[in-house]
Structures are given as C-alpha cells and as structure tokens.
Image (cartoon, rainbow, N blue to C red; front, side):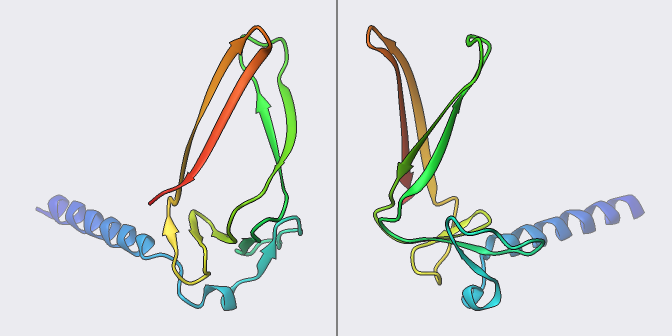
Length: 127
C-alpha cells in the first residue's frame, strides 16, 4: 500500500509541475528579465528575452553534413522576419504579453539536379 501511495504522489506531483510549465511566462516578463536585441551579447547566468525587430537582418548559419559527404559544408545567409518577435526559452510572442509554446514549425527538402544541390527550408508560424 505504501508503494502505491508513493507512486500516486509522484505522478500527481509530475502532473502538477507539467501543468505549471504549460502556463507560460508571466504577463510582466519583459519587466522581470533583460530584453536582448538579436546581435547583442546574451547575459551570463540569467534568463533573458530575445527580441527580433521586423525587417532586421538576421544572420543564419546552415550546415550540411553526413556520411555521403567528404566533409561538412557551411553557408551563411540573412533572413528578415515580417513582424517583430520576442523569444523566451521555448515560448514566443509578437506583443511581449501573449506567449505561445511551440509557435513555429517547418520542414526541409533536399535534392540534386544537373545544376547542383537544392535545399529548401520552410519556417511557418503555427496557427
């Protein structure tokens, strides 16, 4: 009976902790932690919110690697977001108040053609 009680308490505790993690950041998060613009150094040993302004160039480094290649290859490009975005851990927000978890999804496709390799990456905002 004692073992059943211990397991029940452990499962209940895990469920409560899981529900708390799903609640999201507090409404006043931007006043509680540093807000770092992309490209600035991140604070040491403390959480922060990353802010990306709409239209701001963002460097993106891509790596292609695997057993079919003699050596990994890297390329850097720049992208720009169509709207401003705040990112905190696995949460994101367009207004800094309403946060979504797992707000992005995407995919990749690779191909070969006579003109060379083709790589297509897609990132969408979850609806």
